[in-house]
Amino acid sequence: MIAVPYILKRSRKRKRTISLQITRQNDVVVSAPYFTPAGEIKSFIEQKYDWIQKSIQKQKDQQVHAAEKKYISGEYFYYLGTPYPLEVFFQQDLPAGLVFWSNRFYLNSANGDAEGEKYFIEWYKNKARDFFSKQVEHLSLRMQLLPRSIRITSAQTRWGSCSPEDNLAFSFRLIMAPPAVIDYVIIHELMHIQEKSHSARFWKLMETAMPEYKLHRSWLKENGHKFIL
Image 1: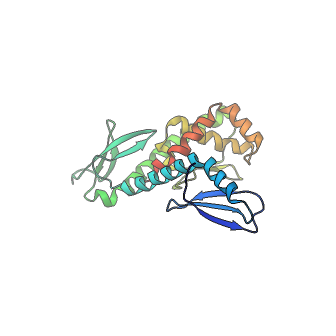
Image 2: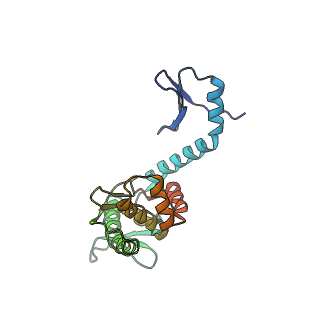
Image 3: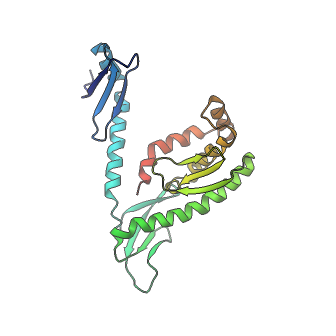
């Protein structure tokens, strides 16, 4: 018998379904209809055991990753799916900022820990703007789905979007993912030009355009937390 500590919230308004969520404190909260038998709730939690453990571990990884970025020599930062080391130095006769050379990031700053995030965001945005523009042009011509514009955002969890007017937007953080995963997000948003909702038709169109899209979607769900600065 698997024992999972949890907080139970019963509701007279909830009619049928049992649901659970993991709080930011890694507590397991179960919501259930008021008269649901305790045995049914316990069985539900046991069935979700693997998902609960995986979700808690993922959240812990996210918290550790977010806390550990100090912009100091030896840290690793992702670019197009590969982590590269950072070297921080200060040389007054060279421009302050971030450069990428010979598979390594170099940050010239007197206050690397204070200015590092700003320089990385600036660098990632410039790379994303160039890379996404070229890929959107290539893929949109192939799919014959032409957007009106492309915009780079600072969104932390929303990788891309397509407005009702067919304007596309992508988070600069996506430039940290592998090229195939980036293509998945671009194709996903381009497909919304043809089908606005996530209907069954939409996913059939996605499978036709990119048969392996589920693999890239799963990869992004599992690894997206690594791309938070």
